[in-house]
Amino acid sequence: MSAFVALQEKGLRFEVTTIDLAANANHDPRYAAMSLTRRVPTLVHDGFALSESSAITEYVHEIFAGAPLYPAEPHARARARQVQAWLRSDLLPIRQERSTEVVFHGAAKPPLSPEALVAAEKLYAAAEALLPVNAENLFGQWCIADVDLALMLNRLVINGDVVPERLAAYARRQWQRASVQSWVTQARPPI
Image 1 (cartoon, rainbow, N blue to C red):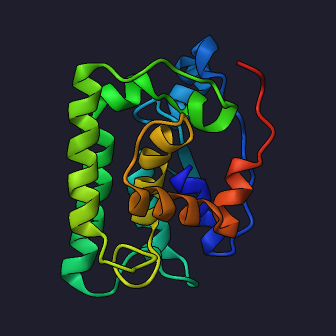
Image 2 (image 1 turned 180 degrees about the vertical axis):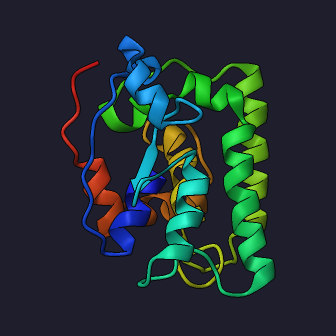
């Protein structure tokens, strides 16, 4: 999602090729030859292939003119990258119990396990500390980390889990961004 949003924010024309992960198409020899990590997404630009969403968004930010994807101030930019890395490497119970099927297919899931509740509290504490009071974005101006944080929060919001209202409102606001809606409204095969 964040790679797609990054390309949209930059106003770039691009082609999306769907890879069937359920059929392990990412391990097909043709895809494996292109994608070093055999992961989705993989961006191909001028014969250079790059996978991992945060690496793609950083590359797009640095290579292409247009709207910035990261804050200009070095500490804020580093914090945005920290947020992205953290959301992808931690909070596993939330990601397991509130997969993106909840977000993009409306699949309802049972109450969170004790482990997921602990992860959710950790998420809320960090988000509360990061998001200034009455702010619409993490670092003043929108950045790609806002999308990643909103996605993690929306795993819970969309399922109907109890989320602090300030954070739920932030996630709903981020979800309305045109580039995000372009991803959210993509046609998806049924689960």
